[in-house]
Length: 168
Image (cartoon, rainbow, N blue to C red; front, side, top):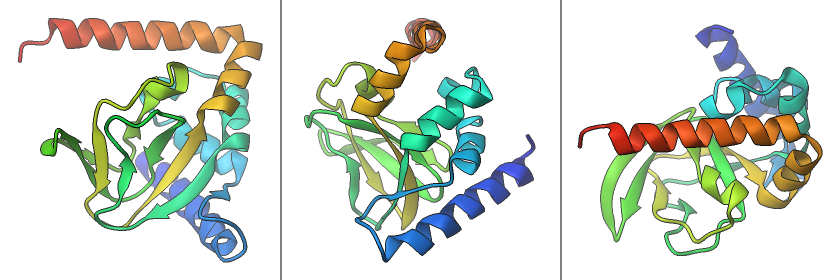
């Protein structure tokens, strides 16, 4: 899938979300097929099959986050991960900005598995849209799809190895 296809899929997901926003809570469901296309561009989900990404997408929700609002808060227990569909955000540790994130970034992925307190705050630096993947739904799906669990272990262990072996 090329970048214009991803952009069109994100736009369609956002149109659906905007249409639902007035009728539901802050989080609205997305169109699973389109959300699955967006998930295909997120490295941790890229190795999943289209069917597996659609299953995740069926449980995902979309929300608008305003400038300055936290997406996740340091020290709070993680109950979801978020994909930045649009916009940008900054990662803060102990109130200090340590990293900037752009559209397509995944935030809080370790919470999908561990549910541990967040290691950082991620704050919107402009109005943006996110895709929320709830921990309980994700864990239930992974428990029924062992191949997904194996892929996650491989991906996360590779990321850990790279982090430990990359010069600072």
